[in-house]
Amino acid sequence: MTNAGFKKNLKKMETISRKSISVSQDELIKTSYLQPENSLPLVIQPNIDALNLTVWTQHNRIWIENQLLKHGGILFRGFQVKNVTDFEEFMQALSENLLKYSYRSTPRSHVTGNIYTSTEYPATHFIPLHNEMSYSRTWPLKIAFFCIKKASQGGETPIADSRKVFARIDTKIKEKFMQKQVMYVRNYGVGLDLTWQNVFNTNNKSEVEKYCHQVGIELEWKDSNISGLSLKTRQICQAVAKHPQTSEFVWFNQAHLFHISNLEPTVRAQLLANLKEEDLPRNSYYGDGSSIESFILEEIRKVYQKETIIFSWQEGDILLLDNMLSAHGRMPFQGSRRVLVGMAEEYSLQ
Image 1 (cartoon, rainbow, N blue to C red):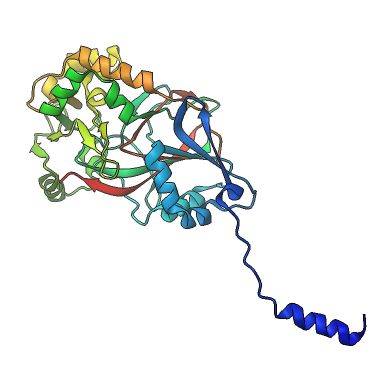
Image 2: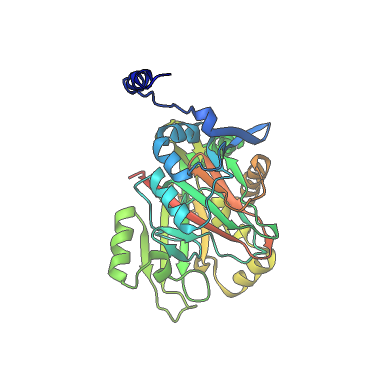
């Protein structure tokens, strides 16, 4: 080719407009299920090693939201999520409204921003399935768990579809709870459970009173010399809730978890030997103050067991749950385990 011909072809090439390369969703990720018979959780894995979960999430929030509402939970697996910063950035890409852990029911440690450790109960302790803060009238719509270090044995985070739990519970039990609701009674004192300072994240009694007034919690300050108690609260909350986006009914309370029958028999006997029932660290009743029958709570626990899905953690996993559509718990474990938690999008019945 002559020099003149080469220049002519080069000029022609420069006039051709560049076409953008479109990479489809199927080429970037792949989806599957852990168990063929269960669509919870949906598993999302990268198809290319360089796929950044945070960047991908920023461009696919609506799609993720739709999948979360459909399945109730998503397990992000195989992405290069290595530390708390990566997890926090993912949560911020998912939602601008990350939440502080307020009105606490379990011990946790603050890590950074609005990221916390998972519940710091002893490794031998089984945490029953529940929806986060369903003992309140305000709760997060989303909750995510990030596995930095899996236990050498056990330590799974079992999950269950709250829609299926609701459907499986006996109709008469559902009707009674829906009519009466659930009352949670808590006594805060050193050596019994969390202190009121820890639960409300303040040392100021006026701030506690203001918060309780705003959310409909009845409170009573008590002489701290009486059984080490300093504050007693009562609150009547929902037993069943309707999802604000899907309009589906879900079983949404922690009556089975707060009730004295949830404790190990030896612990329960020891507490009742030293305290009156009204002074127990925590307990649950029907909303009218009457006792919840133990056999009914056992029936509810059996329903959770039947709907439980258990999978083993892989380090780097992120489990994202719609907190109303899916319940979660924790299996006992051996060895060191580190799972972090982030919550987002506050929702209130009030």
